[in-house]
Structure formats: C-alpha cells, structure tokens
Image 1 (cartoon, rainbow, N blue to C red):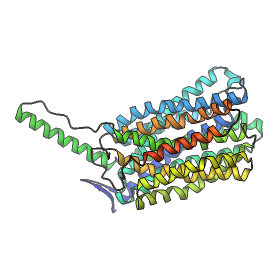
Image 2: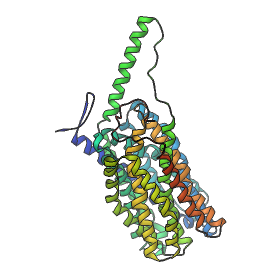
Image 3: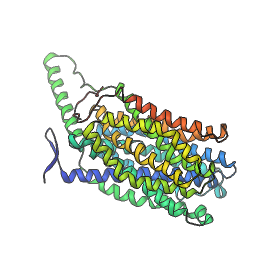
Length: 453
C-alpha cells in the first residue's frame, strides 16, 4: 500500500486516509442532519407541539430560542473536548462526540408534547438540545483537524473539503426526509411523522462509531507528541546538568489567528443559519407560502453542493485560500438584497432559486475553503482547542443568534425584509474584511508550533 502521507517517522496508507475521510464524512453528516432536522422542526413543527399557547409569530420566535440554546452549549463542548483532543488524541474525542449527538437526537424523537406533559415537554427539549450541542461543539472541528492533518499539503484544500461534504450530506438527508414528511396528512405529520427521522438517526451513529473505533491517530498529532516528549527529555537533561528547574515546552497562545478564524466562521455560519433556518420559517409564516417550497430548495442546493464543495476546495489548492474566501464572502454580501427581493415575489421558482444559490455557492463554498484555511492558521499543539473554540464562538455569535434576531426584527418592523437583508450583508462583510488581515496559508506545514499570524 502506497503511503498517503508521511510526517516525520509517522506514516499512513491511502487506506487510512480513505477510512478517515469516510469517518469524518459520517460524523459531520450526523451533526448537520441533527441540527437541520431540529432547525426545520423548529420552523414548522415545534411551535405547535411544544409551544401551542403562543401567537404563531411568537411561537416561532420561542422555537428558534430553543434552537439557539444548542449553540450556547457548543463553545463549552469545544473547550472541553478540544483540550482533550490536544492532550490525548483526536480519535478518542471523535468516538465520544458521535455518541453524545446520536443518543440526544434519538431521544428528541421520543419526547411527548406539551399536550401530554405540559411545561416538562419544552424543558426536556432544551435539555436534550444542550446535550446535542455539547457533543457537537467538537465534532466538526475534530473531523476537520483529523482530515487536514492526514491530507497531503498540495491536496489539502480538496481533501479537507470532504468534511463539508459530510455537512452537505446531512443537510441533504434531513431536507429530503422533510420533503417526504410534508406529503403526509397534517395530523399524521404533527402526531408521529416528525419523530421518525430523529429516531432513525441512531443508525448512522452506530455505523460511524464502528468506523471510528478502527481509525489510526492523526500523524501530525503523533509527531507533535513525539516532539514534545523529546523537548521534555532535553529539558530534564539540561536541568540535571545545570541544577535549574526544567522549563516546560512552549505552547502557542491565542492571538490574531483565533479572531481571524472566528471572523471567517461568522460569515459562513451566519448566512447558513439565515438561509437554512430563518428563511425556511419566513417562507411559511411571513410569506404564507407552502412549507414544501423551502425544504425542496434546500434539497436541490444540497445536491448541487456535491459539485460546488470539491470545486471550491480544489480552487483553493490552485489559487489560494484567501482569494477564494474573499470572492465567496464578497459574492454573498452583494447577493443578500437580491435574495430578499426574489423572496418578496412569492414566486416559488424565484424563492427557490435564491435559496439554492445562497446555499450551494456562498455557504457551502465558504465552508469548503474554511475546512483547510482555519486548520492552517493554527499551530500544532493546541490546534484542536483553538479551532473548535473559534468555530463555536463564531457560530454562537452568528448562526446561533441569527434566527432569533431575525425573527425579532421581523416582528418589530412588521414583516419588513430590509433588516433581514442587512443581517446577511453584515455577516458576509465580517468574513470579507477578515481576508485582508489573514495570511495566505496554502500548503503550510501543520507540524509547526506557532500560529500562521
């Protein structure tokens, strides 16, 4: 078997690389299927099941608050599991996180509604959402770090984008299931139909768990651990010779790279939440259109993503991470207002087209390039912790709050679309500006201890 990558004395075969790619794909597919299932349910189902006593617009706002609660748990999970991943290895963490996400999602499918157990129903929903978010806080980052550290430098953008294909697969599966579920009679959908995809998700969890138990550890992590052991041994010898206490090996500190990674994440995550969560609910409650329009558009956008994701990754290998991210975030910044104008037409084709372009080109394109870019911004010894924290804090500030803020603005400004478009412009502009401060990182040596900037 030919070696796919050699880091120092650590060698991995092409079979190891493929297994890692499949494992990362399954895990991130699971994560995004979980969150997409929840976001679509929050937009369409949960206001009636768990918050039936509210006005429809207020009920939608409260349902989106429970969606945002999961994002609050993610930074805590990112910190906890990120530190564990930098200390004991990427593989062990990925086994734990996939189990937490899968079990929490399955249990949501078994929850009784407000009509059965009263206030306990939304409380239990929030508890499970917190557990789901805690595990997810390090899942995507761990899979991203693992695959980037396996990939050959010249193909890192393309190979790291496979993590994004996992997120796209999760979105596709969830959207496809909801398209089928919306064909059910209203009574069947509200009573038992919505539960099926949550419960069935445990099947993906078990398969992903089996895959991950057979993974080999990241070659970069093993090389870094060996370097740290050698440094500790040298420091001990120097201490014995000089009689002075040993100095601990240096560890990179959070700095400019951390905030740049967070800004890049905000551009992608904010627009993702607006397109895949808020606008889906807006189509139903604000525009009074059929609920199948939005879910079908997400389905088509996800299918197209299987082409745009690897294309964006490959282009970042060819032309650079920075120029690609700048082009994609700049495009979405300009496309935000046309998106809302197309939606105001209430024409199913134009509404769908706006969502499809925003998802498949802007959001998935940024996510694809981001998979390699943010890994290359950080040094090897605390890459997992910094990357996970930057992603999740950025996700809370954008994706977690975006639907809540947008729903509040919609209620405050009596269904005016301008504030919603302004939010999308702002998220895109944050990432766009960040590219003028972030360095080009294409092909960077991931064993380097220091950050790229």
